[in-house]
Length: 636
Image (cartoon, rainbow, N blue to C red; front, side, top):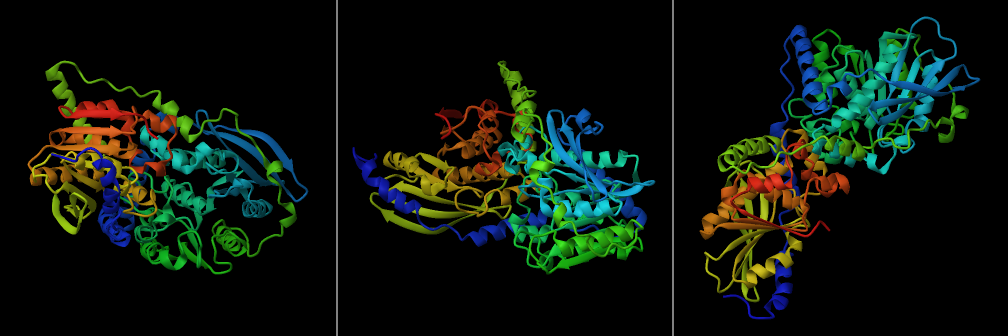
């Protein structure tokens, strides 16, 4: 049975035409994921007493730091004292000086900072850690300079800390998408960002002129995110002023690009707590949230206030400190900014809570702004990046081969399979509905389009091809293409022409099912689920459905590294469900992701926390036995 010579060339355009049919609307897919994630993000805890909430604050801080931020990071790095070196001083004629500083975040990875201080300091004075966001100029950007100059002129020590990936750390391999390389080798990406900002706080706290009871933190955007993270998790921060840096479960799920960075949606960060909970950890310490009314970037004031300020206010009221949580909505200019109005709000708030004369205006300093060349500090030529740090950590990884002895191999496979299920957070699902949503008849084959609804309320799309003359129990193959099933014509045609049944499938995060690739995977990862585990579970469920309808063993064929790993993970966890896995344009090792390097958004589910730390391609293939694993060529 099957096509005569030349049919492949004839059937190709007809198969492509069938694959090009519209799939489900994107809004429906987004709604599914929103509902799935909302159930995973817990509500704010019930208010009790100040004593109980204070105890809960300590528990949450310890959990977020020890179990999430520091996951996989060498303890000696975490516990290391700050290592700052001064590389120059700029003396000014305006009553302050600027110290140029370089410091070590972790061994081999250095960052930069500027310390602004009054030329005349008497006794111990307040200090503020300034954390810039996604500014190409980094700590040299105009509004950072103006704010730090104003603090220094008013007797407040101001430390401005570079944000990794910007300013003098703007190496291409420090782009935030490459932070996920660290997840892959087992070190949570949140850790390096948190260690960087904590080093700055450690340094400020150790300065002899600093009053450690009057330390503040502030920043815009990514700096606002850093501000909330550090201020929530480190009790040394007495006063916080965050500007457009965080949202809530509700705003982030309706605007996923608001929090579209690997560190802001770090693995498991939102599994037990969300940003409102982190904000509530500030109670009763003075906290000002500034958001912009028409922000063109993220976290617009009217969209986040009900979930941040309004929901967190009662936690401050527990302590009789309702006035310590303040809110300001910026309308002029109202865009994404830390310009004059927002700076003046910060000056007033810090001065009031540092017991200083109220700082109501801004001291003019436009003619004191310095060029990047004047403020340049420099980092070592061989300074590590996210990518080279991941490679350094990867060199410490060793994967034990599968034992040769049969009994020992069975025990090994059982233990490794359990570990894999834990790493990818595998939760089996069943296909509760295989809805027929369309059909066609073309050339010598028929198609049926399906929406597969799973027991976790997510879904997948597929198109089943079968020759007119092929029986219902013809050999069964599932094809998966990293570019989506619409690009899988070359994979489908040979199977159809051989008289087989072939299901071209797009799992939930594949194909054109969701916009903003990466944003949804990050939110899912942060909830404690793993996109890789969800997709592997879907593939197992569809394979079981396919086998039940055809009565035949199911083979999987993939094109590309994403579906290569998804299929191998599924086959490693449920080897009895797959007769064979054929991977084309595949990689030989997960090290390829680091060595190339591959950006996160190119293959988001592959940067699963701890995946390469414990597994590699050959490990997954060994776990898939007795199914046959065939690998062709290298990634394109």
